[in-house]
Length: 403
Image (tube, rainbow, N blue to C red):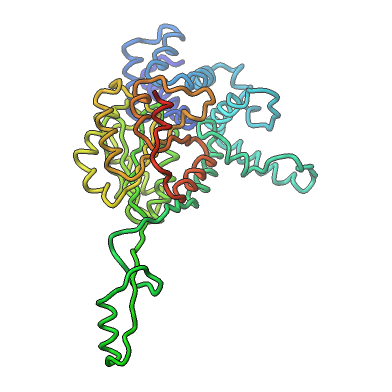
């Protein structure tokens, strides 16, 4: 490590870029905080630098392994640097180490961006020479469908985003108060019948019929962008961009410590332009979560504008609330009573042993119609299929389980 302050700042900046490429939510603000923390704490020992950067750049348990490996590699530990070259080689996982291998692959791609492409090109050249019996194996697409967004490598995330861009959301249509001409309609249209009789001269009177017009209800999305949801919310934004440009009356709001309407930004056809516009207006990315306060802002300022005509609400959050559920029960109940269907999408449901222990989860759960996991492509497809079916009758099964 260099004693030159300018060189040290430059190295911290590059270290932050490596962590960001590996999947950690590191932005310019975090880098500035890290530099200031190092200036205050000093670098008398290697451990001092490690824990100073750790306290600023790591805010979740699952980020510790990536940070530890990246620190020892970036700050000149040659033994670990030699091991990184082999992390992208294909391996067979005999037990439960697949998640850590994927974390290592993300880190390896962050340090050596060309290795993944080189491996793919080499595999393409060898395809003609190798014959593999794939009778009982899964295809790459099937494996990608079941892979958790949290454990995907950078290349796998790019492939997943391409598949998400092709998704459609066939929300079931519901009858409206308006009518349209229908020869098999259930109601007689007396005005149309009289007009037809006048045109025919009164010789015969053709009976005209009409029926209720149908239209898909509005879709309102409330997506959590706090630190615990950062990696998932970035993928969900690609999904929301796809459905926003596929149909009308889709309204998207992002929330962390404040509420931000990004519906207009998602209307851009170019996904990169849309993400750039969203980044310019969202100020609380990867921060804390104040679910009760943000729902209060939505119910006060937006509910009457966007929840008309039986809207369907997708609430995407892990339910972890910094305010310990303050004001949450009243606001989630008001939201539930204002919409046709409230669907809670929670990535924590991917765990088999999930239990609603936090105050926020226990408060929200009794008021939702459906509680679904959303952590991979397969779960997104299941969501699309569920919204394409008529909504089930409201029952107390979810509330009884929560109680």
